[in-house]
Image (cartoon, rainbow, N blue to C red):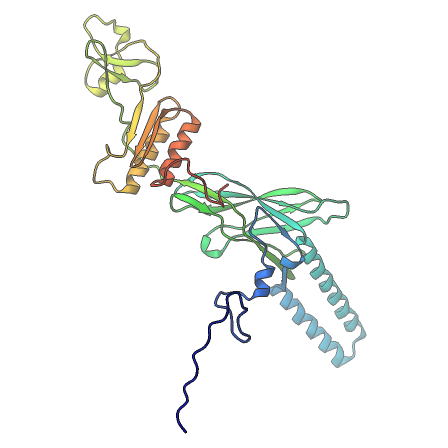
Length: 352
């Protein structure tokens, strides 16, 4: 017989379901995809999104019941039958109570405070139960993150119709936006015989600032010449300006501490005006520093300036005018965290 060549497979029309017997190329089957809670601001753990399985203690309890039942059948012990059925009924009641403990619980993102790289970002989750006189008391609700995240689980208990906040701490290794991974909510109440759990994908993220450089140099203040050409510098206490000593200055105006430290005679001008503006510039840093080292030093300078000194920030493609105060400091830190992106840009969908 001549060798017959099979016809090439025809392409399926767009939108047609995959052939039976062949698995979809993307992970989970359709029924499991439908059972996952949707990604939105508030996640409700209803009957379609709860899973329950016996725990290790529950499997041990089931083996004990089987052993008691076989022993009662072998020796015809009436009291053994009664005790076995009583414990079995208690186990069924525990299964229903464990399922009811997590049923209709709502979870929403509450807060995500900014942190510095190397610290732990705190994500607040608002957990609430249904309101009503017949609402159950929620005991031992636990929230955890994937094991590779390195976060410790947190748990709480709720009164009837009450709400509480669960705080999950996630290590922040790098600057930028740190999104909250998938949260697993579980419960083992009562008696740890069954584990009920569900997942929640919450649109929550924390902004991670660069790690401040330890032992950073002092702020790069620029000297301001007076009318006679003498340089004026800010003092440490922020109350007076310092200038070079002039012949005839009274002794009580001499800044003895600063003179001994700098090695030249300085006098206080008696002017308690505002501190001079200080520009923190990317280009003024030593060329040997890398990008992250430059950002760390600039971050340390922003924190060292506080609210007393007006500072401006110049990065490649970013410039923030001099200012002071908490809002200005947060704008500078945000620009350092998101560089090379521009400050004030729209936060991602999962940002708090």
